[in-house]
Image 1 (tube, rainbow, N blue to C red):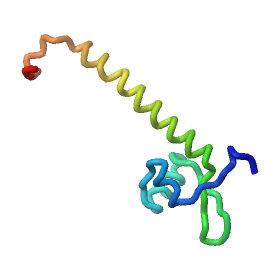
Image 2 (cartoon, one colour; image 1 turned 90 degrees about the horizontal axis):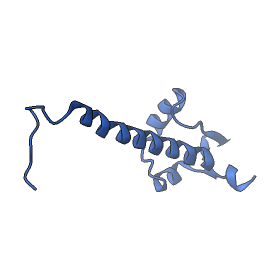
Image 3 (cartoon, rainbow, N blue to C red; image 1 turned 135 degrees about the vertical axis):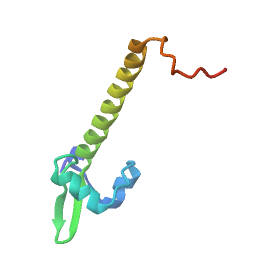
Image 4 (tube, helix red, strand yellow; image 1 turned 90 degrees about the vertical axis):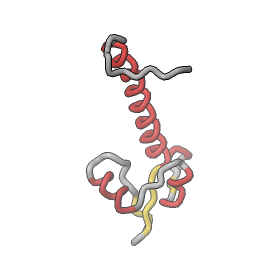
Length: 89
């Protein structure tokens, strides 16, 4: 098994910032929204580390894309909106 195919346990997901419960992970997997687990033995599962890392990179890219679009949408509305609150600096 190469370094890119290293398996990590459920407990190791937390170290990568994934603190979802097992049931929630299973639901996300079933919907294709989280990498599928690998059955290591009956009742024991693990995930391919490179797939988890790719999943996290995708989530970061999605966040960055949302943040890049959000300021533009605000700027498109202009400063003439009378409902805007100006805070003193």
